[in-house]
Image 1 (tube, rainbow, N blue to C red):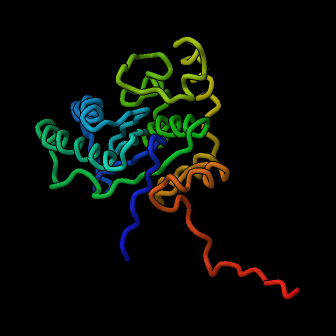
Image 2 (tube, rainbow, N blue to C red; image 1 turned 135 degrees about the horizontal axis):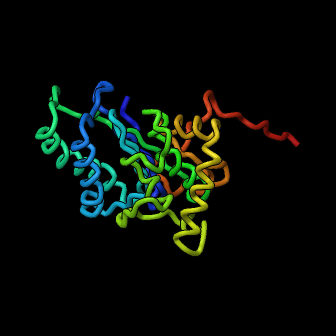
Image 3 (cartoon, one colour; image 1 turned 90 degrees about the vertical axis):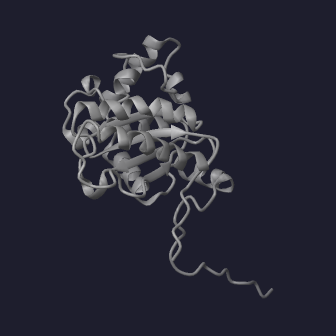
Length: 234
């Protein structure tokens, strides 16, 4: 059976998961992390992609992006790999011909509050994967920028992030407060499932509204035959 096309909705945020091949570590040294981190804004600029959030851990990366063109998603990932792979082989031992699993995972996220939750989901990857106790001091995540600890001018803040306050200080403070609440287990599990299967993460109303703009069904169809309504004989 033919593989289903990757879900895409123009300008809607997407979460991408890049995994090391066979679960192996991609980033074994600080230099490897630094090379990939430095390549992110370059590849984004070359491929017309906005990066909203990111988190790098030894065995992979989560990225939150948006772009107006479906083809740019794959090109962006290819661009990253094309520049990073040869460079990282100069700073660490690589035992396989490929660093990454051949197909990255992705999900489209409803703009608004859910996109802010998805942003935090990406940044909490450090805690989930490595047990990092303090996201603000983890060096390979966008959380520090959103919380006002560092400045990364190449990050493109989500519209909902801008609505957190009128000044950078207000936005950063309220995002820290938002992060302290944490992402609920239900939201985290739902987003993880959508990312694993490639479905839209949204509420039902947005799902119905946006379907006509998507390049394929945004959620799985109900199993079984469709219900046939009884025809009136009056």
